[in-house]
Length: 285
Image (tube, rainbow, N blue to C red; front, side, top):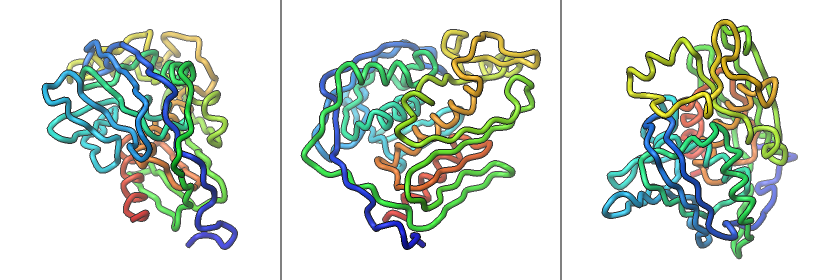
């Protein structure tokens, strides 16, 4: 149930798009392929959508929870016979910047990893600016709490008077251990956008043998070993948990505008993030 103190619609702001064209290029974390991304302003109620420029029919893949296909070490979307993978950092940056409507033109099947964070995406968006549009963006509260479990891991959405994101991790590596962080949307640009993806030295050989992290390097990912960080310094003492929260916000962006709630995750994954988003989508119908 919605708490009595929470109105049916908490606030209404205007939808937004980019003030110009923004462009990046880089390698895909898993594919290792060079890819170009061009963000174009889009009309109201378009939403966020990918367009595969490298394919003959230039199929459109909406950045929506309904088209999630795979969540193995990244979030993959599939629609109209085409796919795009590792979308979470770019979608998180769009959500942080408040960009509702955008056409994401891409020349390959994986969004480039850049430096492993959302910061380069966000900086490019900030350079071209954000423009308000003549259509409302309602902020609707979550009606009832939702929790998705997988063993000890879970992710929850709890009705709340304001949106907040809280994340916890616990890894058997002394350099990471147990970490928690919690932020509201106005803090995300500074608090989580710069946080880079991370992995473990002992897993690199196996993952590459499985066709994964072909584009991974010490320039686009933090690497931790049993003896400590392979490529310090960290941007934050708790950079790993901040990056996990960034992943969560990018996955929740597949809802368009997530409902007002307190989102809490512990030892979660893209699989759990997207399962929660799917459950929220069913509640919002």
